[in-house]
Length: 93
Image (cartoon, rainbow, N blue to C red):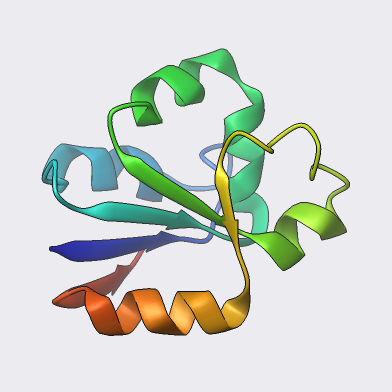
């Protein structure tokens, strides 16, 4: 079970697209930084729908997206630390 930490928007890098090539159904995705913006598009919402997706709350709030992304699990930094400990491995893309 891997926690995939994506920090860049798909407009900035191919990290998320590459991650989806290798992700297993039991893995989780944490979006932080500009990566949270991908959830504003229907295309990425659909691509990420089968996976356990979390977003870093501070980054969502900083972008004024709290209410728009309220269907996704928004976690605090301490929950990110806990998630990294409950997964076998963390990959930062």
